Length: 154
Image (cartoon, rainbow, N blue to C red; front, side):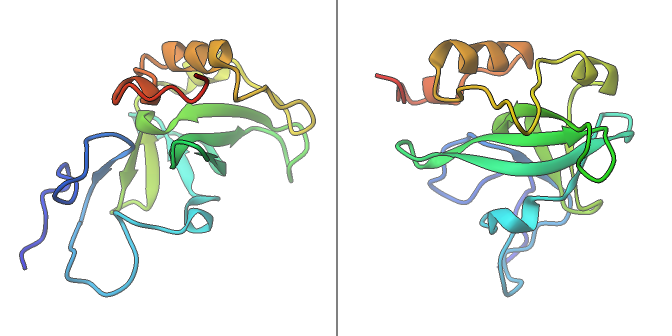
């Protein structure tokens, strides 16, 4: 079996979610990069288009009813978890770079600093459709639930 085109998901997979760039070889034994344990992604660094580090993936948030990833929570700033600002990133706003072993977010670091965020003690109500829509709009991403007409709040 030949390596797959990095931008092409496995056959039958609808195009949604994070993109993948870099070395993608489905003949290699083990997990990844199409199916991975969430804890292997937590702690991965996130960089902007210029390669500047923005922060790290702190949590992967799952839409339980829809059965898919809704957000990656980005942690930036702070020291040893103190003073960190958290940001919910739409999963489809990220690209997994298998060569550099990081995620690339197509937005400059300064725009992320100005993005709506929260801290560990004050999480937003992520099941609120107005909040979720505003986050997707901020990042210029169509809400994931619109792609297949699934509405998690219906």
